[in-house]
Image (cartoon, rainbow, N blue to C red):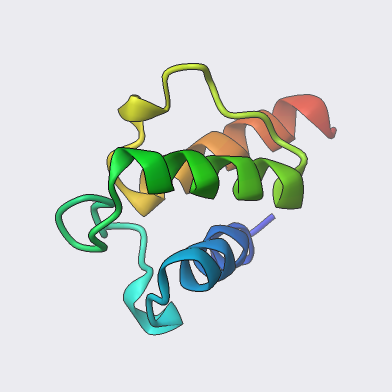
Length: 83
């Protein structure tokens, strides 16, 4: 699965929950600094992304600092879960 395909899911979730412009949701964007997402909103983002992708996030989602961190996790996990 191409990174752009994986990015589309979290980008749509972020846009829906935060009102962010889809064009602003790129792998190098930081959740707090660039997109203004606080820890409570991050929980909503993670739950929605899990529902959409079918990939569970680790218990410590604080390790996700950028959109690229989430995309990488989905790519690695999807590869393991879905051959």
